[in-house]
Length: 413
Image (cartoon, rainbow, N blue to C red; front, side, top):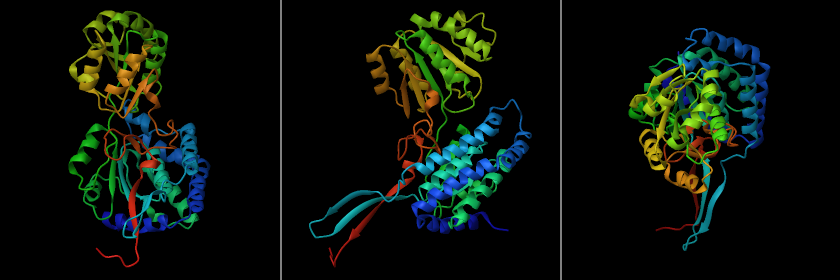
């Protein structure tokens, strides 16, 4: 039986095969993979069904785990988009000759081997593999036991596409889902260049605190929408409803609605019937409680509710007296993922864009657009909320580092 370390070393060695592949080989691999995913829809759904049946239907993770024909089609189309993106490696970034005749060139090159730890979502297996293949990076994947059958079905299809195009299939490896596996990942500093956690805040913090391999965080999203006093109320209602109900289990769904006192009554009156239709639970501060007293699923908000990533049909509502109070609230509770303002006041919109510190900041749009595919990046490994190397949708363009090439003719120093 292969050890975890031996699997990681095999990926490290196999990644050279990927770096030596031609652009045509890589594009053909991804296109073949996309076709194979659609051709194997029935088998993928069967594997996924076995995973879903083991879950609590009320758990928000179950929605993220569940696949259907549309989601499988979306995965395949996302991979096709990745195949059509330009190779981010091999770009000449700098070219100059020094006083002593040395020729200096700087190129974008693959990171090497990317490790990823993630929960529930089987689409992540396809997304990360496709992005790493396109950027010529090996990848070591550690999914959760919740998605075991789905991930095993995925890796089999991925490896077949690689082998069919004469690329060593070991350049993409799915590790066993057992918890003990992560300790091997954390210490594989010789074989893995970067480790990316994607999932709950507890998972991200656990990886951050324990990994010896450099970590790029894809953080939790406590997202806010501020309905400012000069907002178009109908526009604000549509944006808030979209950001909450279209897919509440994802990190770019809104968690806290901040509304200016001057328009709170008018806004909440129009919001109530739509939230009631979608059975959204509301955790309201004292001012919002009075305005929503007839709302059926109403709770008194605590400080903890304003810092919660709900990942479900729940949200907090806070009424503020002015713009400054709204900014203070966001500054205190934001996880620096996605923040939005709805306002027709251009000066306040510009101030919001400048002062709010987040990976993505919006004016008059839903936070649900924070997504690699929506941004035209093909797919994403996650949404990075940190500031070093990558921020926002972490996708193909950021799976590179730099290498200096120096050409001489006998120069010594």
